[in-house]
Image 1 (spheres, rainbow, N blue to C red):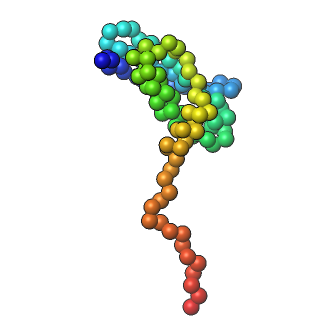
Image 2: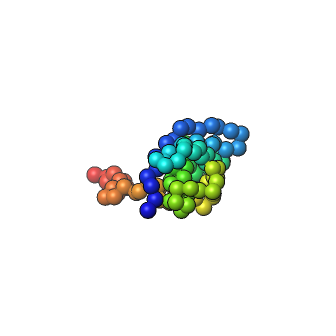
Image 3: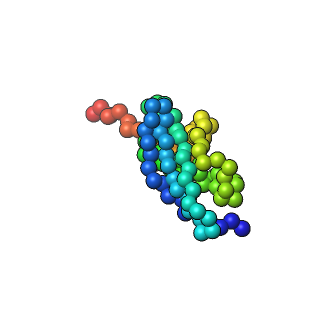
Length: 109
């Protein structure tokens, strides 16, 4: 059984080619560890990902890595891949409004 961890988002830094998101992970039995995850700026400028979704996508990635490696991932820096961007966008894309139909052209009287 894995112990509980506390994952805290601490901010980001805008760099020339990427946005780097920083997290601190605390466990009861060990010291605090710092992780960083980058997303290429092009993902934001091409509108494949909103700036507001960046921290969430990175948090999901970090939680997956922690779960995969029993809270002890071998790396402290990760990059969001094109596949992860596409998967996130597919899962989090706005749903079409249900029950809403396009307005019909005004009938002539």
